[in-house]
Length: 268
Image (cartoon, rainbow, N blue to C red; front, side):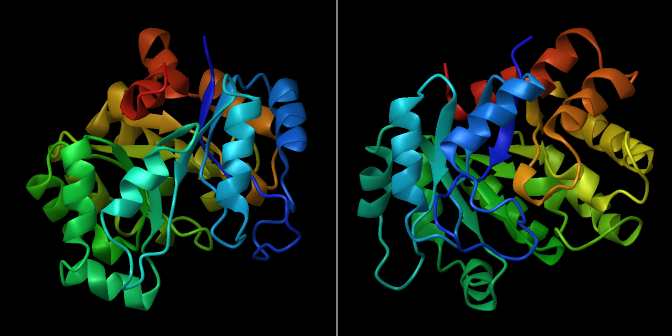
């Protein structure tokens, strides 16, 4: 079984937000940790707090194309336009895009449909786009997916904030599960230990994972870590799914642990 982490951040600079405590997280460090945990590949979402992270992602994908692929980002300021999409996709290892839409100014533009040019560009190119959003933005995401059905969306971290714990962290879960009606939306079951109220194997999260899996299915549920903000090991993140979810077995397990995200983002 090939194991692919659906979301990590690589960066070489010293800066990082406090909750990403493994800083910096270099290619060399990631490869060492992946080898120890039995992780074959990782989807790199370049750190938005490091100005050089996109260029570093290109270096990682060029030097280790069998280990890293990238969902990159660019600033969604007033100067951004469709030409940036092609410019980004031309970079080595760049399979799609990822945007954090939680800041007030960007959230307002999402709500007003001012970002429709971006979704239209992704739709025409039929590329994957990962999104980190607030729970109240989930209806807007459903609307985008319906209007641009050839774009493949990935929802970061089950749409749960890095600062929330259960049960409050799952207050929005019905809205997230409703997104499963849109066939072009998938979910990343990433950073799950951060919302747990107990230690490994984080049993407090298992019921929520089952609900998500039942709604989206194995083809649209992707295991991952966001490892730089977790206080457990990468190996524990793997074995939590592989050993401690008795309902996840066989082909379904293979899909969730890597094959499905590779299919979704077009990583042969």
